Length: 178
Image (tube, rainbow, N blue to C red; front, side):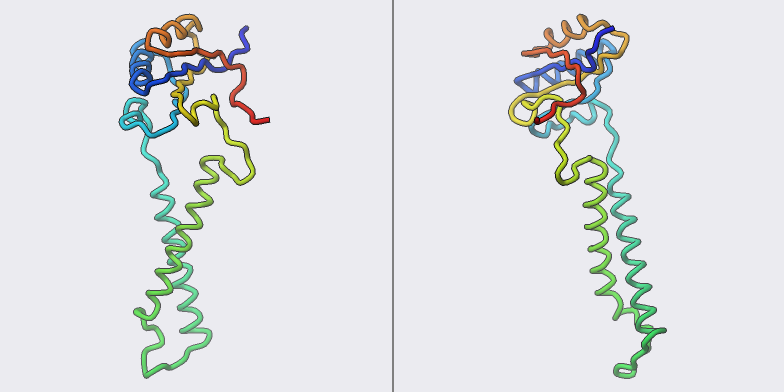
């Protein structure tokens, strides 16, 4: 049994990489992930990547922050310490709007920061997970899970035909910086 976990196809040109994705998909080779040093338009549709659900999380954090602040202001200014200012009603909603809005934005921003760190595993002090360090600089990498039923030589030949400058058989999931 081979100890290879991933087969990495390294490309110099994004067009060659896109051609490699087409070639692999045409031959029913499942792609684990693609690493690029810059955004490539249209790659999400080609890899069938679903839209992010972070917008729903932002909406929920905003609702939570707005509800908590509105409840706090209502409790403090109506029940706990009602003050009659200028003959206004104790429950004057227009007075509550500015502070409620600010807390909605504050909770959304903090909540999304923590959610992003949790979802992407980018906690402070943690080494990033990268298959090939050159993918952060100038190379384009297609990672294929080697535990599939397709022979490694066939995948290597497909990547070479698509224009890969290098094909690596990686025995570790990620490159360490140590």
